[in-house]
Image (cartoon, rainbow, N blue to C red; front, side):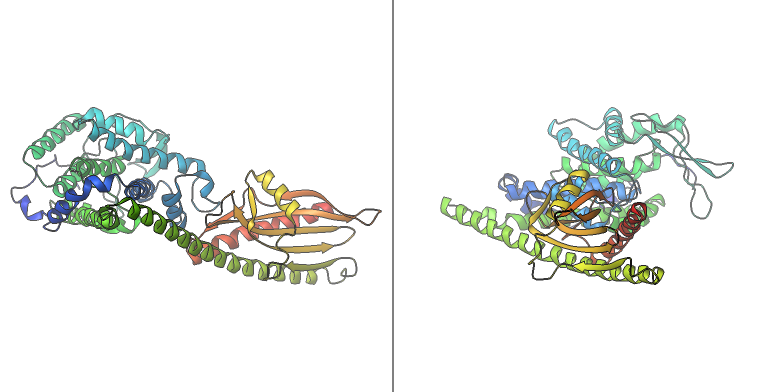
Length: 486
């Protein structure tokens, strides 16, 4: 598609206005002051900002992230320790840095509006600098060869070279040439300010500004993320909610953007309107109990009820994650049985010298306190706190020869407080008897670089696949440990 200079809204733009939103906004405005002061609403907004920060990078395919881990990060905060091995396709530290930049950009939009600033190209460059401060490079297409290269990213300034993408059918989609970017961006800002003076509805202006910005594609990379920030800015200035486009919206979002390329903004307006409607309904649902609080005693009672609800929620989370732990333990037990059979076949003429068998903790928890020393030492080496007070289950592969080699797989809680998060650690060690008949343990070594982590927010099928991959690494490393000790 050839580049066309950006166009203003058509004369019949009124037909795109969403009739459902004004009544919702009216109800919201009546309740907004008391609602915003509640802790429940503040939590809602924090989680919304985290969701936006995570999903905007997933949409742009900067990284992948399991749905269960995404939910956990939204609920508990953007924390590197909450992302287990295998949950993303990029280094965890890099993913967290990108998400935090994106979260800071969304938070900065509220500060921008609070400071009563007006949109400018200078602010757009500042926003781009913030969004990409932990992104060093981007991909570039060599049109003559079709080769894709990684090049240094220009942060906070307009592009110097064309950034036209190649479609699946081999055609080139042309964005604004670099030499015209400055003038087109000035025109974009001027038109946006005119729309504000004409009171164009937020859902229409957000869609227009988002699309026209992406038509120009003024930055080398990061244009999609910044376009969604600009749409959020329009909504926040109107007293609405920042735009939360998720991976589930991606297909509709792309289709609506392509429809807008043909001059029809209705798809984007519809998507953005639906997004805002959901946010208003969710937030107004929070206000039901807040607005009914009229006496101190009732406030205390409601607080007690909330605490009991939280306790119930935590208990449900614990039940779910412990159910997952049982499923994973069964997978591990079955796999250890297979490994034992494989070893016995390979060593069928040497079984008098080597005994190999699994040991599985009983379901009644009577031996949940076993192997504490090995577990604590493994956790120290992996730099986390292993909590076996609230939950502990374990399995062992025992290899008895001249001395015993043990492979221990342990399920336990992570951290001092049990919040529905469990981990699985694995270690190998030697056990031998002293001359006095005492059993001693030696050479405890973790079998992976980090424990396997999971929570109530995981999806069962993807969790089982992740665990099977992790378990194979444990088994291979454990057998190597045994091999090296012979």
